[in-house]
Structure formats: structure tokens, C-alpha cells
Image 1 (cartoon, rainbow, N blue to C red):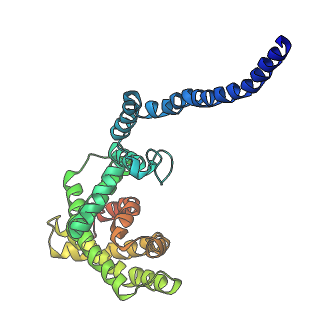
Image 2: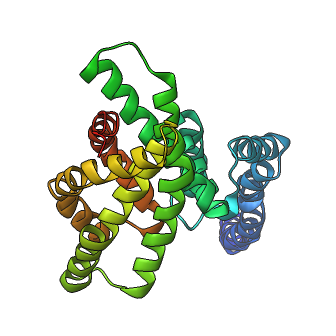
Image 3: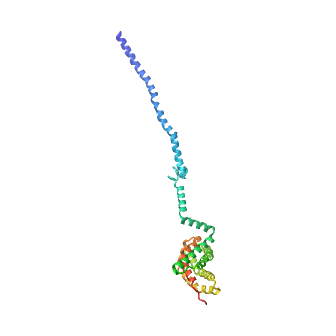
Length: 278
């Protein structure tokens, strides 16, 4: 009987053992994932923390200080890394302001658009003044004649600059284009028709300011005109071919005077030779 009782107890224990094992497994399944929320919540705490917000604000402040914004490509924008458009424009403006020659050229063109006649007259004033100064100091090397300088410079301001503004503007309007035929036609008209007219104006004006009478003006013009015309043919056909082919109409007087500084030395010399009385 005791053996039978032991067997029964052992059988009951075997029957109860799997049930207890099955009862413990749900508890393990419930407790195992407890650590997962801690890992998943960690990145959310980092992104939403004050440290991350401060980092974002510091990046935005640095972009604002440099003159850029995220929208124009300075920080991840669509126009490229660094958003160089605004920076390059400001750098170009700074270069223009720091370069005196670029600033002077820009100002000259602005005034040329606003007051073309006055600026062309002033340009010719400088061209004839520099030409006479060079002739007196480096060619003739004599006592400086200030009144002679006044005669040449005032002719440039009052006659050459204003008449050139009218003549070349009229020529460009009447014969448009920069091909071979219009360029040749303009050079021909300038050297055959305008050249002697210019010579008459030049010698008449300079001789009148010498206050030696009307006959002196006539003799001076007659004696020096042919020298001036033939001297012009040695310089200006090629210079004007370049002028009418490549130079904008508004810049013609400046181009002419830049070349005419040397030619004005020649005009200064022949205009101050004594005329023979007829």
C-alpha cells in the first residue's frame, strides 16, 4: 500500500509539473519587454532637449551674421553649398569701391549718360591741354606759355568736344552698322569732308585769340591747313576704322582724345608757328 501511495504521489507531481511551467512563461513574456521603452525614448529626449535647440539656434544666428539665409542656399539651400550668390555680389561691389580707376570709370559713364555734351567737352579739354603741355615741356623745351595752353584747351572744350558730339552722332545715325562698307564710308567722310572743316575751325580759333587781326587769321589758316590735313591722313584713317568698327558711339570722343593727345602735340606745334604775311 505504501508503494502504491508513493507511485500515486509521483504521478500527481509529474502531472502538476508541466502546468506550473506553463504558468511561469507568460510572466516572463510580460516582464522581458520592460526595458524596450527606455531605449526607444532616448532619441526623442535628445531631439527635444534644450541642447539640441541651442545648437539649431546657433547655426541660424551664424547664417544671419554672414548675410545668408537657409532659403537662398546658404545652409542646405537649393543654389549650392554656401549660397555664394549674395557673397559674390557684395565682394564685387567692394572691389569696385576699393578700385579708384573702376569707380572713376563708372562715374564717368554715369555722367556721360546724364550730360553727354558737357562730358565730351570736358574730355576734349583734357585731351588738348595734355597735348599742349607735352609739346611745350618735352618737344620745344622752352618757357611755358600759359596763354597758349589756354588757347588749345579752350578750343577743345568749346569747339572740338561739342562739334564732335554733333558730327559723330549725326554720322552714326545717317550711316548705321559696323560692317566694312559703313565703316569705310564714315572714314571717307571724316577725312575728306570733316578733316578740312576741323582744320579751318582750329586755326581760325587759335589765331583769333592771338589778337593779330583778321588778315593774320586768314594767312595762318591758309598756310597751315594743308599741313594739318595731310598730317591727319597719316594717323586717323586706321584710328577711325577701329573707332567706327569697335567703339560705342557714346565713347567716340574719349577714344579720339586718347589718341589725339599725340596728334595734339603736332597741332600745338604747327599752330604756334609764325604765319607769313600775305
